[in-house]
Length: 179
Image (cartoon, rainbow, N blue to C red):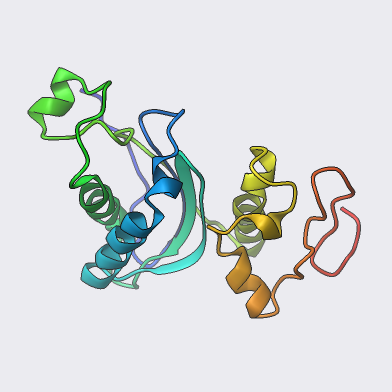
């Protein structure tokens, strides 16, 4: 069995990509309330701060700030995946290994994490998260995707509603400067 080395820095900020096993599925957006509930329960039991997030049909991206004395993001993702999966039938591609571990086969076992290094790194990852629905062709404008922290950023005045323009036009930055 492979042993993956993961950064384990208490109080660090991390970017994550978490994916369903079936990349053709739309389960995350079709069951968004169940995902929100699982996410909220995990945050209550094992606190963390969500800096930015975007949920797409078959994967999600998030940036978390962990508490100063805690580096346990794995337990948080496990809690989210477990709670979300509860009540769904096992996935059609569930392997014997997943069955033995009582996994439903809904999620990919692994996920991508990256420790945020500095403010520029954070900004690049927040931009990536918010632009992702446009990148995947789900909408032509960032503002049209409902499952994103982009709307919170606009409410707080951190981004303009027309940030990033649209898929057919020019891409503009937060203050309207061309990128």
